[in-house]
Image (cartoon, rainbow, N blue to C red; front, side, top):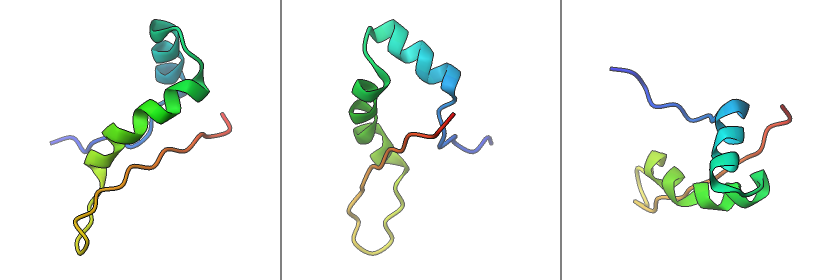
Length: 56
């Protein structure tokens, strides 16, 4: 099985903002909730989503 990708390429981000008609900075907050599904909290069971913006 393929492992999930934790990185969105610049091309994927550009495609998303073009389709949605928003800026990259507007896209970032919308990715926080889906990012929670990648969290693996072994003790707290509190799933946290975090998003970062690379320099490319």
